[in-house]
Length: 336
Image (cartoon, rainbow, N blue to C red; front, side, top):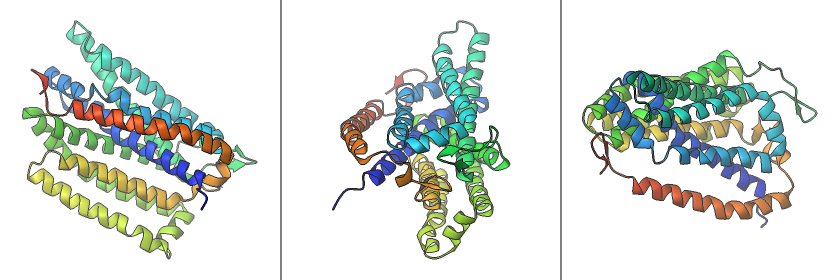
């Protein structure tokens, strides 16, 4: 049986995007939580907890964007013009945030460090918010005529995209709080526990609101989720979210350290699966499928050879770095 290279590449790119969201999400979440943590020592611990991995986390964003350009050129050529503004702002915020990440440790004066702390936080907020806006605009659909983007410059800015932008900021904040529960101790960990509960409640409420709004504004999504057999395919997703929320609350009550982070990742994974169920098989909703957007099969096969070598190497290196810098981070000794 012949391999469906287009399907393999769609799964690979979707996986890369999710890995970026999961890994860079808690990283951005720390900057989002900066205003809730005032002490210099505690902020230093927060930044040091991701210092070995933060730049590597963004590797998956490059793979997702590069794979889209190489394998699905039609999707790349229509999605990018529709989302130029939020994506450019996101990239600028990531660059600004990366500079602040390094500069905050090199400022000799408290005032200088305060401004770089603000830059780190602002960059995190803007990057997360713009990612959410881009997601919302993408889910709403992109107008295409003659294999080209036919919408306006401001089509990406709608009440729904602002809602998804706000939801992603809150969700990343939850990931950041759960990461701190896992990687820190003492007063900072207690503060993270206290932040995790309201952030989890807000995240779950926003997941429900975004899901309901998506069904309200999109007839195809509504038909898929509420009709048969889609109802049976999608029904496990909200049930699993509910079970995961129960386990998350239980983990916080017992003061477990790793489980809250895994549950928070689970919220994102289930939301991502739900999005996939809604959109399949369209890569540019509501009209372009993955097969219509794909390049020639020979090109896909050639590129897959490279991916078969590079992706396992990146995964192995990432796993090794996380294992190498395992354990708690403290103000006195760093990792121990």
